[in-house]
Length: 175
Image (cartoon, rainbow, N blue to C red; front, side, top):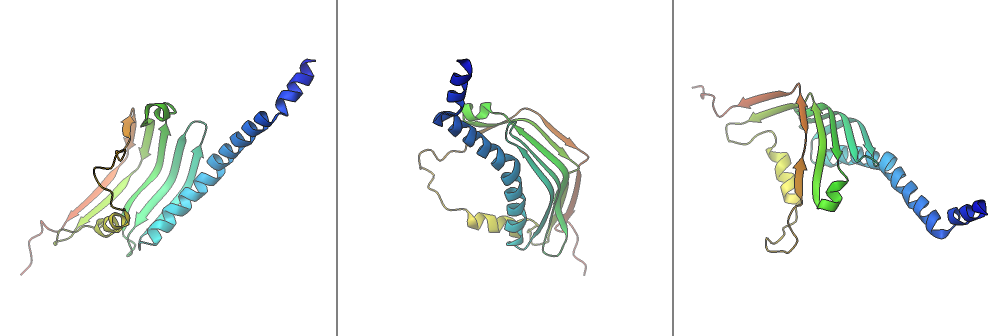
């Protein structure tokens, strides 16, 4: 009797639908999302004349944890701009209910930033930022519901960072 009820429950349309949706969510989260994220990071910046290399991308859809290894961004001349050895961001499910991005834990290991400001005030990130700003569609400020969701960060670990700052505006011109 119990076995028949269980079999009927497990073979019902709602049960099969739930199992199918859960399986699709797990496949997309574990396999598809990391591959698409890596491909988009590399291709979007290549289209803008920069080079991005991404080592390994992992996403755990059950814990909402994203991990990225060995990311490096360089300009068109091959000069390093930004990079890190490891990034881990752990989102909380609670953020969905609260309507706020809630980061429970984040770790950034060995970040490296090279900031080079030219005499005219532009810097090595200027061209890339201008390209992204030109891609952003204009939205009226008075549009209802156009606010960004809140961001809550509980814990941040930043270790072994390196910042290289070159400011050519401070250099005295040679005569």
